[in-house]
Amino acid sequence: MTAIPVLIDCDPGHDDAIALLLALASPELEVLGVTTVAGNQTLEKTTANAIRVLEFVERGDVPVAAGADRPLLRDLFVAAHVHGETGLDGPKLPPPRAAPVSEHAVDFLASRLMGAASPVTLVPLGPLTNIALLLARYPDAVASVERVVLMGGSIGVGNVTPAAEFNIWADPEAAARVLDSGLDVTMVGLDVTHRALLMSDDAERLRAAGRVGRMVAELYDFFHRYHERTYGFGGSPIHDALAVAQVIRPELLHTEHRHIAIECGSELTRGRTVVDLWKRTGIEPNAHAAVEVDAEAFIRLLLERLSSFG
Ligand code: RIB
Ligand code: CA
Image (cartoon, rainbow, N blue to C red; front, side, top):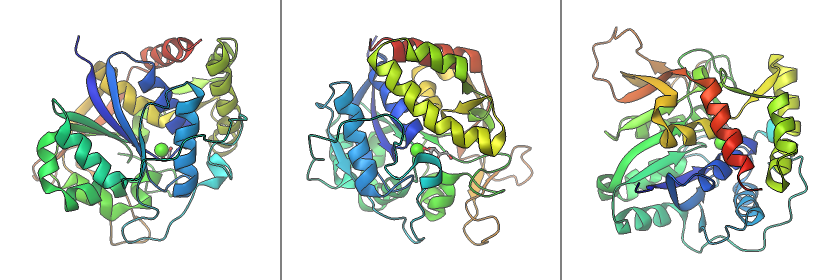
């Protein structure tokens, strides 16, 4: 089985961190590199966090390139109320030993894409600023992209506002650029991530599953406080890990090929992913929107892979 080459763009962030661990623990994937973007926290913090997570599992060999420190047009709004001041509050992770590579994330993505032996799957897990800049600065790089599997958006309600999910809301202009790119885009939105919760019992199993499992359980402890308080959930959506899981096992999600437009004009509905689920507009579909999830199989995969670190 040839591993699928992936480039992960993220804003760690508790669920980004778990998504990175899932990718690293999965032989189906070859992680060519990690790029970071401002989102859940500032770029400095999300970059340090990505390196901390990689070093925690002794994968300092995976290069990290820092990208955009703010959205294309909008002001930066960090989600400290969800992820804490560090962006990874909870576990006591050592500070990063290494620095990111000197290349900007956009140049790094382009060089990795154009130097890859086969087309690469892009997995954006934060605001889409870096991906939009890549498309603008390196239009030829598109030919080296197999597909884009992004965590973001929602057919239904939002999370950061009633209308919009955080990654898209944070940089709607970037999201619009990605959806209009002609790339093969899969949208893993709140419609499925909120139906595939990691429950407290699962976290307890991880806590007993070794050093990495314990660290993930400590991430969960902090992350879950927000979701219990906000939604009354008995568990927490590990949003970004579900996007990575879709690359590993596409059958975990059922998607519909639909047109998705991004609201960039209205403040009330800024960042809304307007998914033409019932094909009312007659506009050609431009993405695969996830509508169903095999939650049990996803959580089973997540627990199995995270426990495999020992
Ligand atoms: O809305 C959830 C998304 O926003 C996740 O990617 C989370 O990490 C934050 O970036
Ligand atoms: Ca994220």
